[in-house]
Length: 268
Image (cartoon, rainbow, N blue to C red; front, side, top):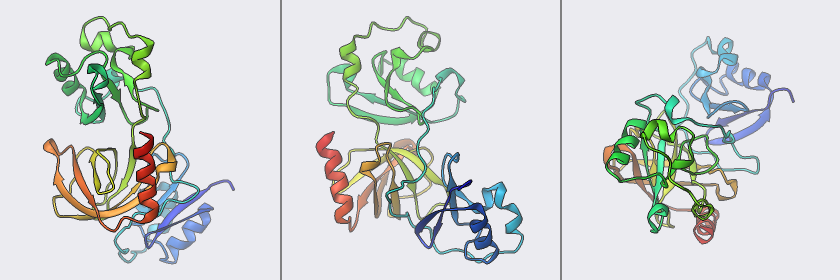
């Protein structure tokens, strides 16, 4: 199939199908411009109205779709993360996409924080709250990296990188639990890092979350390691300081989701 497209209809994901199928469904109002589609090459799910290939089918006004619900993970997961080389010095100054993991650099249990801008990262370094052995992650990376291993370290932090032993690199522990978050009461699809995960809930670190405590949301978690995929619904308990994410309490977690969470906890 030349184009393998996926689409979300009434909360369920379908595909792969050809582009012509999507076009016909939009033309017949089986899908409307607020529904989500994805194909290889997209960084994330997009609404139909954001896809140039579907512009010609959007002339007629379409009915408002039902509230978007996170689709269940299937054998063929959604969009894969594409790994890339990321340079701190080329990042926009106001872009909050940098996550850090501290603890490994201090002989303590690891804990993740963020997202931060490059300027905030430099300030944390100046205040000695992070150092050259702190782990850093930017969406697009495959895993956390040691800050001192980045080629631009000396230019950004104005000092020579620390001596890093192989034993330091082996303490990188688990990969980041990256999640695609399809939040039911927002139009934006978020990507963030999950932390403090338990059967009861978790915290999600992400930039500029527009919700508030008490909101009921549904999420679809697609980490880099797809064996931990799960969907969940529940309530936002609180917004984290600086609007850097939120705490989320599960409600009615399915047995399949519980197994995924328990497996992640056991192996990490």
